[in-house]
Length: 133
Image (cartoon, rainbow, N blue to C red; front, side, top):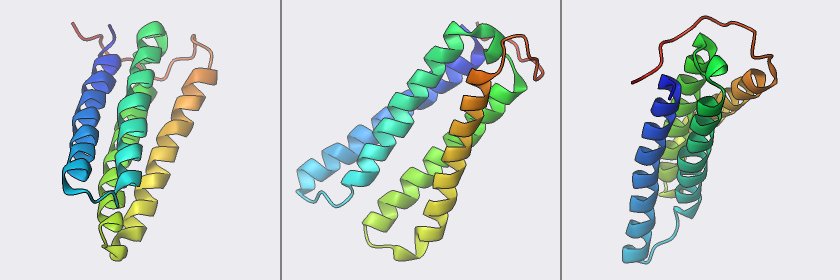
């Protein structure tokens, strides 16, 4: 399996742990004010990252590009910043809306890069990476 797939799957499972932890905390406390953060962390962090990893596993020619690595880094950092700042904004820290916007736009940039990779021909080279063992 390509290294980028491993990166995405490993990040996805960490997002799943965080998302479920937020859900459990909401359930135990009875306070569901961070439901939006819980949903974003699970959907964008767990599900979408796992789908990206699966796509790259099925398309190893695209998985070894430097652009794929850039997409991973940009997208993952975006989800971390967006998920964390959304959680804090929903907890009552309104001063972080600017950070939330930056995280959201960074996540969106990662999605746009992925769209570029998907629509680019497999023969197009963006530099290469080595596969993980």
